[in-house]
View (cartoon, rainbow, N blue to C red):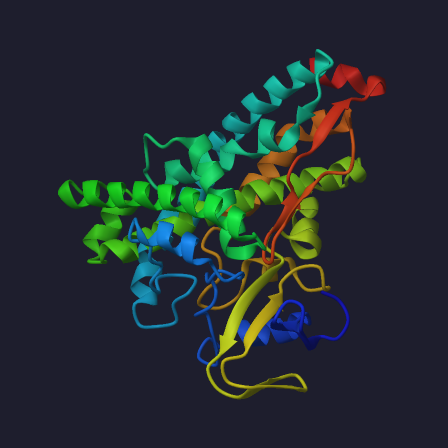
Length: 361
């Protein structure tokens, strides 16, 4: 996404807005630039894939990211309480404990001359465990959640062919069935967790599942991807002056969520570009000289987990700094490269013999 600050991209099928000031303008005007297409499948789903999803009652009515109506505010307020600044600050020791344990295990493997994937070994699970703790959710199969998350991101923001769509739809349907089961259990005995709060709010089953579906993905998988990208930056650029600055640089230049979508409700203009009603718009949130905060959005749909993501990325870098200083990449990493999500899929590393003692400290 380079070139003009606003233009039509025929290959993508979107009016692309790269200029940070224009992107900010769009995000601050949800009446004109609606979020209705925010979580629609980028690649139209096949009949077979849709049949699999409909078999579990899969539905994503307007709730959070795709909602500009009156129901948005109470739903957002209910979820925001789980991510208050005090709750986020209080979870730092847990994030540090989870990450430190995985760094120690990875260090031992590296010292034994193994190749290690830093994404799976360190970055993958702590964000999921932390967000589940914040949301009060127990007895969750974390590896399954991670697999469901990646599959759902590819289904809704990727370019899967029909065979791949069918595989991904089965995964998404399995995730949705699990959400349905948790919702049913919460209706029978509401607890002080995400599902209990949403039941108490009076939402329908479909609304509860829609909130939980993307919250459980966005609340951890995008942070795993942010950490993975920051790890990659440190591997290529050792000895940073400030790890917080590495987090901010990553958010500004290579966020795990580099784009986001909107659709025009009426004819309008973006800069000098005239857009018709119903025009799909793709906003560049990262990599175009804008502030790091733009990566989390601005306005009524700003990411509720912005503070948590920053904290977890900083903690991960602090815990892994010595390890990262003593390893080297085996090869350039394969990438998760979707319409709105980008990060290293794997970071395979081996010990740098000149710094091997880092792993025994």
